[in-house]
Image (cartoon, rainbow, N blue to C red; front, top):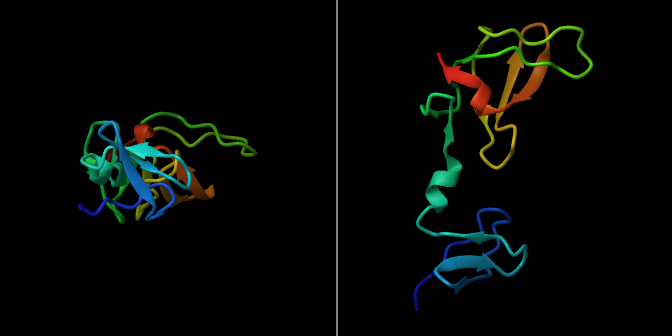
Length: 110
């Protein structure tokens, strides 16, 4: 009997195979075990893979709730931290704004 991978969403070890996919019995997340490794990678707007500690450049003005001005295009952000499991998958600190979460589709690798 082959060992099935743990669920990438809730890390439960109780998974089973169904129609070529692996299904989690705890959260019912379906995933392909061959593509499970790619879900941990984060790519910028140009398709370059990002790593923790990289520097990125914002490619368009991004409005910020509660701030009077947006994050301007061309703003360089240093020392990013990745969160591949989240919609806003980059954590960073931006001068003048503080700690923020950004979407990787709005940045490019510096």
